[in-house]
Image (cartoon, rainbow, N blue to C red; front, top):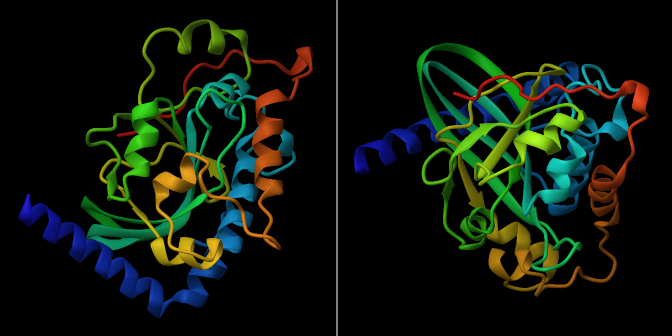
Length: 272
């Protein structure tokens, strides 16, 4: 385990170094590829980024390149979600790869249809294999179980694909989604990704999500924990606004799809 941890730290360190050296190029590449910047920024900017990503991954933004009714996150998936993690990752390396990124996590309040304020997160990880070059991807991770939300609330590093099983989330808006995919015990996490402006399966196994305590403190004007934020114990400070993010989630839960555009696509690319 210690050796694995050292490898991960080395990968994150290398990706962070490359990101720092090539900050302008990474931002430009993200814009050209129609994805968001993975570089950590202030809390309000992270919330704005999450709002844009969710808009692209849901039916309300169908004019975006690569976004059609056959590859959006189904409404029933959002309605049943216990939480959402929304972030962008920069992956780079040669023969092995490190990855860094940033985003937010938000949770549905217990026994309620309301959502908590967001908690800021950073991303790290290490991949193996013959990999060269760099890539930027947007992700939406659906937290399907209370246990998944608790894992994000403990203030510890969360490793995707470890104790939390991850699978490619179902796509489309057909009746088969609610009729079959959601029956029985759900997978802890559903993963959705978009790279180079197109929806595609991108591996998140081994990705580490880390609470950005300093960013949370700066936004909420006090020391707060992820658990306090995600259980609704913390109020958004006066003068700060997360309403657009909440509005996007609410629309994704409730939007009606015209019957003639409905599809019955059940699965997306496999997450490996």
